[in-house]
Amino acid sequence: MDFASPEFWIAVGQIIAIDILLGGDNAVVIALASRRLPAQQRTQAIFWGMFGAVALRVVLIFFALQLLSIPWLKIAGGLLLLWIGIKLLWPQDEDGGHEINASTHLLGAIKTIVLADAVMSLDNVIGIAGAAKGHLALVVFGLVVSVPIIVWGSRFVLVLMDRFPVVILGGAALLGWIAGEMIAHDVMLAERYAVLAPGVYAYSAPLAGALLVIAIGKLGGKRRAKTAATKPVDLVRRDNNSEHQE
Image (cartoon, rainbow, N blue to C red; front, side):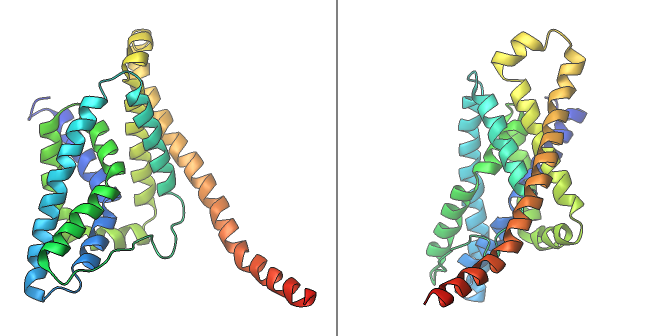
């Protein structure tokens, strides 16, 4: 993929978008892990923590790119990415699932940031590997560009997502699009079906993936929101019933 080609910059844009969309939790992890450090050390913890996290992610994506060349694994990765996109449209828990222990030492904070990012980066790794289409240099370039955006622009991005839900919808659709591309380009499918109608095949699977994520994500999100809204009522009824039984 040539540096001056439009495909290169489209892929870079996809990698940056995925990393911002799925890396919003990184800002929360950084803040929680470094909150007990002196002000002078927080900047160092953020820099070295993100440096270590990006280096580890590049290694993970390198192995992911190698594995995605094996038949059926792109299908598995695409299905997992579809699930990630669907969950992105579901309402989040109030606590956000963050249980980060803050450290009073610089090395401890850096270690926490790197390890937490490694645990949380599975969705990023799969999404970026799908967007990179086998080019590790593209992965490195996209991640390097996205790091300052995450560190300094994550708060703005999170506010933007809260104020304009269509941003999340577009991001989920992007994950569905890339998932469709991954599935369509798996060796087992591409060799059999791509030759039949190359033009239709190239765009039908990504479009189907994007539409599937939006449809299932929005429908599942409404059901989860309705279930969450009825839970307090059910708890009150159970408490009243238990009191009457006593």
